[in-house]
Length: 278
Image (tube, rainbow, N blue to C red; front, side, top):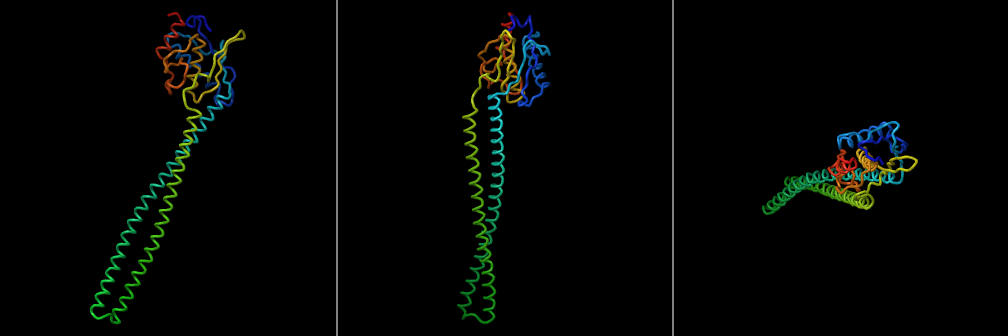
């Protein structure tokens, strides 16, 4: 480490980059420059910078940790796809229920109309019988009215069968949606058991020996997390130890730091100022 980083600023260069990370050398250089600027801004003087001939090489080495990160990303994609499928099923289910309610209301109205026709027919038959019975003309009318009621009753019977089929279809949609939700919950449980919890800063390491100094980055989820891991390891290269604030870059656990922007806390700045003998 530097004896006093404020008098003898560190310089970082890019070493090996494993292609499986899917990041270019220029992107890594830009990240190093951004992190270096923010560390320097924390105390108001240059303490670290990028240089093609820097004394510390930064390597991106793909190993089992990054494989786990890639697996986590794939798992999240599976969960997201399951959410999309559930949303689509729910939309179809709600539409089916709404349509069924309209069909059922129409069926009930038609059933009442047929029943009213049947009641009127029976009342007429009773009246005619009370007046001495049907003549030939009335028998023809009776025949036509019965045929009409029979046709409507047959149509209502078919409609009832169709409604029953729609009820079965809706129940099948509901079962499918519930099964999908159960699968999603099982995936969430598996995800939580496999990937959840705070992670120690094992995504990277700072090392030095008589052969040189280097930073190894093993794992990151996105560019923002790469910045955080590089900033943490540069902090160690500057001579900083871990601090207590969970939101600090130099905290020993990753998880409570801002997700979208690299932010140094008062504890981070105090640690650097202490290393600078301010």
